[in-house]
Image (tube, rainbow, N blue to C red; front, side):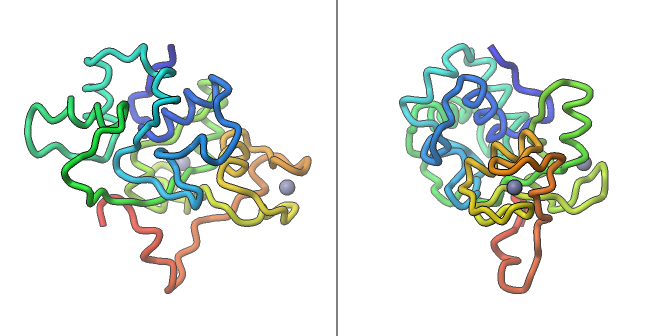
Length: 197
Ligand SMILES: [Zn+2]
Ligand SMILES: [Zn+2]
């Protein structure tokens, strides 16, 4: 049983558990959590095959996670069961306008997490900014494009595996040499918006 970290973004937690369970083989294994282009929504949604890896979570765990590890805000009490059902059982939420952004990460934070805790996690606060609040540096984001090191085309799962290990999926490069900073150009600015905007 893998516990969610205090400041961990739920999307990162779900992928972390599935990765440890050996359940991430194809891009579609990230479905409902991270899209093939790297988009995440305020609330992820697991499919039936994936739910079984989380059946150790108690209703209390789910409540705690929904309040502390998602950017979703609750306008009414008693909503957590419904939202928990959405994530874990694919139940439809009435409000379909769920904000989106991309899964970003700070390389320096990842290095510190590995050094101090032996594994990485995606911080909840990374959903709200393109810069790391601790290191004041521009973050990188999961993407499907080419690796900076060997220029091999990667899909979002290859890039996830690279990002979470620091090693390119295709070539011997290490230390996140494949990664590129989030780029904010005129055209793509609107595609990189954060959960607040
Ligand atoms: Zn950082
Ligand atoms: Zn490479």
